Image (cartoon, rainbow, N blue to C red; front, side):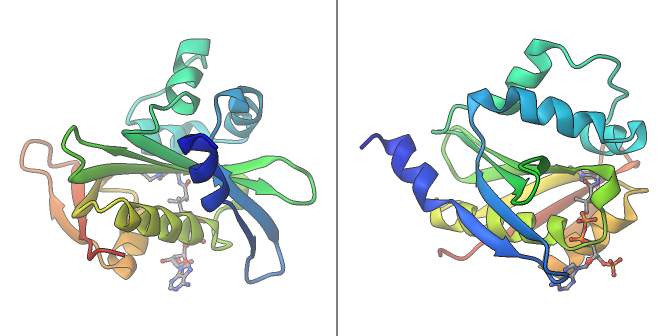
Length: 179
Ligand SMILES: CC(C)(COP(=O)(O)OP(=O)(O)OC[C@H]1O[C@@H](n2cnc3c(N)ncnc32)[C@H](O)[C@@H]1OP(=O)(O)O)[C@@H](O)C(=O)NCCC(=O)NCCS
């Protein structure tokens, strides 16, 4: 069995969120383009700005490919799929550095699904993955006004500092113990 196939099977999860919401989480695949396009249709411009720090005018094939076609030796992403509708609900990404010591995460959910615990579950899973990969810390850049994400990071144990070069951005870092 190929390495990716093993990873793919290992990181699948059937989960039930607090309100009985059944979701399936699995590693992203290159053929997720269609599902992620549909997810992006359900994301507000403001949420796109919080994720990409930019206003995105067009979801080109190249833009989508960067999100779905990962070099799994250096990156991972988990997608959450609704068990009932098979729609993609959210994605969390992790990109590690060349020496596989640290990783940068990013997360994006459908805007109509916030506040139901999905972000929390995906963040916990990517932390578990980073630990299992032996990374010593993960970090992210969060806009100052993104109070939901900053609060969640604080509760997950991240240290939060204002970026030295850009006061509008917070650097959040979580030191990991091997899992
Ligand atoms: C930020 C984002 C991922 C949050 O996802 P979410 O599903 O709305 O968040 P959750 O419902 O899991 O968690 C939010 C709340 O629950 C808390 N929470 C959830 N589960 C919890 C648990 N088991 N224990 C403790 N706290 C928990 C969070 O801190 C937060 O508190 P509140 O609801 O009381 O205000 C989502 O809003 C999003 O996609 N935003 C746009 C993109 C973005 O901002 N990305 C971050 C930059 S990369």
